[in-house]
Length: 303
Ligand SMILES: [Zn+2]
Image (cartoon, rainbow, N blue to C red; front, side, top):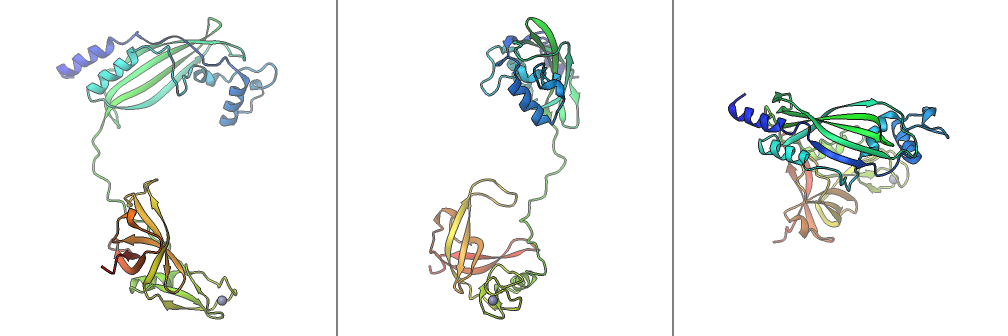
């Protein structure tokens, strides 16, 4: 350890034995509804946790001391000060590493819970796969009716993240699923033609590609090539969730082709917030990467 690390470690160890929470009380007494929810979530059907003589599952120990979203008033400032010191030294990330519990007596519905938490130990500087930092262990003594019912040790690693060995490659647009039913469409795209299926029996046009006609059921078909003219029939602007290779916000348009069928595609040549229903658009082919080309629709072709 360098001199600076020694000095930091000395300051960290000064927190050992200090209180992180004192004279805390459980927000609810031990109760059957919480026990039942826990057992359902865990899939634990043990008969000891139900009925008139029910006890709480021992592993629920921490549940009775949790502060919920509004927190606890019993918290002392020592734990925050310790975190601030570690943050200031560059150990800005945190991960929970393990927890250890001891059960001294069963908890029963009606038990009022009290607890104290102490900072039990701070490790020397350790290097893990995640990065270098210090382990901090707190111990919570849980009491029921003034009697020690169990202890809960909780250990975290406060660390400086290790540098990533190399950056991930740029995410790529998802590949289309090409199968026997739609291979002809993608062959058309490769030749810069947008092909619409036409029923061999009733001549109904259909898009996207399907093995049979929705109007008459015939499986005979040929294709017609779209002229490329269309209008925005509808659209959405995607803000969330973000998806690799896409950069929100962006507009996804439902384009009605001059032939009457509709296709979902991107509208290009206009900002996402300027796309409008009824806007005339024209087909073009966008080379996305070395493998993928997609039909897209350009707005504002007249100017
Ligand atoms: Zn048909």
